Amino acid sequence: MRETEIRRLLITGARGFLAQHIRPRLRAAFPGATLIPVGRAEADLRDPAQARRLLAEAAPDTVVHLAALSGGILDNRERPADYLYDNLAINTHVFEECRRAGVKKLLTLMGGCSYPAAARSPIAETEMWNGYPQPESAGYSMAKRMLLVQSWAYRRQHGFNSVVLIPGNVYGENDNFNLRQSHVIPAMIRKFVEAAERGDEEVVFWGTGRPTRDFVYAGDVGALIPWFLANYDSSEPVNLSTGFPVSIRELAETVARLTGYAGRIRWDPTQPDGQMIKIFDPGRLRALGLSCPTPLEEGLRRTIAWFRAARARGEVRL
Image 1: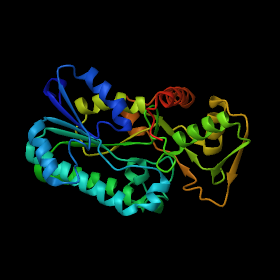
Image 2: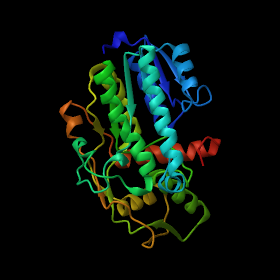
Image 3: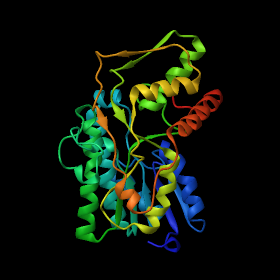
Image 4: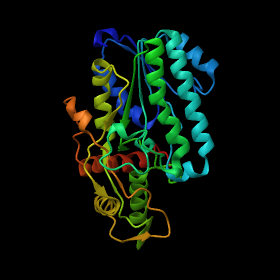
């Protein structure tokens, strides 16, 4: 899909974390297009009637679909049915109503947590169907995995052009720092900043700290979206990540140093570690001549600086 063909671009979930990084990139890449950002206040996409009304009123030729119910492992464990139902409903209605409305291209994202829990790292896109995901977040993970089936089915039957991208463990400015819903990096940043301010002698984290992950800066993900809209027309998914491994223990030590926390870090081995090694293979991304170049420490510095400033203004999700 050429850049000149993108004239009316609808963004669902437009007030979410990743959307804050994607919207400026879309605006810069497609200056002649009308951007239509929509959140739940404008349309609850779990309701097919509201999804249909939105597509009729917005009349987009292109959709970047980011709307989802997402959260950390604790919230997933407590509300698996909500995560399953909401995401299945949202994605089902968006695909069908986009197809009905004559949308030319849909781009959407799914999480790396949809990969099988036992997948060998580095995890390539071909591993998606080789097992069950981590049970603690399976409601969300399986609902998002269905995006691949939806993309394939709608392309095969209706010729509907859709793209599914798989960001790895994303972090950055505008993230959710609510400790019941947040992922590991925002949770660590908040805990260390607040512990340093209170003068706490120690901060406790779950598990042993031995698991290994790779992380991708949200700004890098945002920078890639315009390229995929303009140049990629396939239902074959693509990992968006660095492939650079770091242990959770090393991550905690780095965040502590960058936030100025000088106390002890204690690990609670009675709590689960999760998958021990989970690194995403960026080979398909690199074959396209693309990458996620921001070093982890630089991305962490930006995120910490944003958190401090935004918290002082009362603009952080806590």
